[in-house]
Amino acid sequence: MSQARNKHNIEGLLKISELAEAANESSSTVKYYVKEGLVEIACKTGKNMAYYAPESVERVKLIRTLQS
Image 1 (cartoon, rainbow, N blue to C red):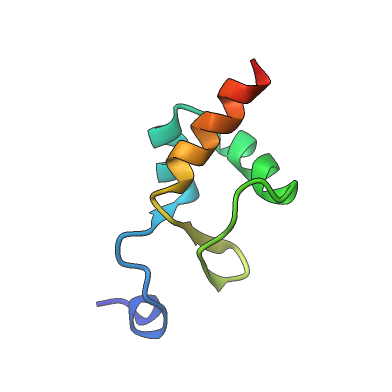
Image 2 (image 1 turned 180 degrees about the vertical axis):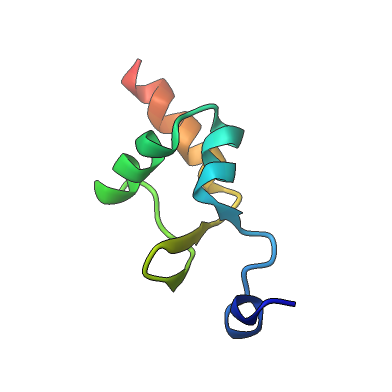
């Protein structure tokens, strides 16, 4: 078990690449949504590592649908 898993409960959460793939979007699109406050980070384990709740997949899909 990694040290990050010991300090933070990240089980069941998604990395940005996993979220982007599941929502059929690019990582840069998801980063933009996060920057704009449209998608929340569930857990930040370091300066460059964040995890997202599985519900974020549907939120990203909804944002894209509403843009259409």
